[in-house]
Length: 168
Image (tube, rainbow, N blue to C red):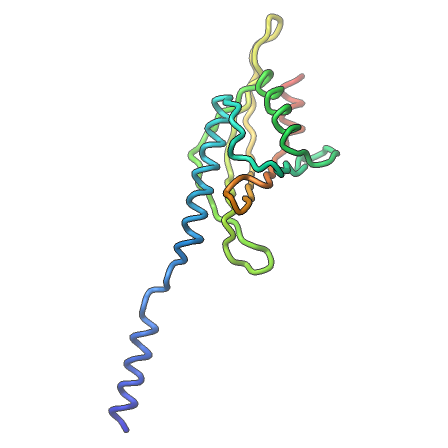
């Protein structure tokens, strides 16, 4: 009986000391979504109008301080982006550390991607004005559809104060 008990305890220690299995599919989805976010950030900085990473059902949720309005869809997002690039340039000031998001109900990773970053926004010089730059910290989150396309994007930061400074 003692041998059986010792063997059972040894087996329990063996099982308990095994490393936890990583969820390869979830990690793979997160890694693929990180690559998409990096491509989108690169396109944004380089003013490349490539919207292939966005779902046709894309929604940019309204999340700026001190503003009102509804969220916008892909077509309005494209128009806004092109208008933004006509006035401003953006430069990422730090290396991105992409973070996994979690499902709020299950608390399991869900493939979404978040990052905190320091951006420099420069208002382009015109014939009558000089270029003007500000730095703004942002928290950005991306949720993806089942095909790996960006479905929701949110940007949190005090863009109202940033644009007031740039445009005065």
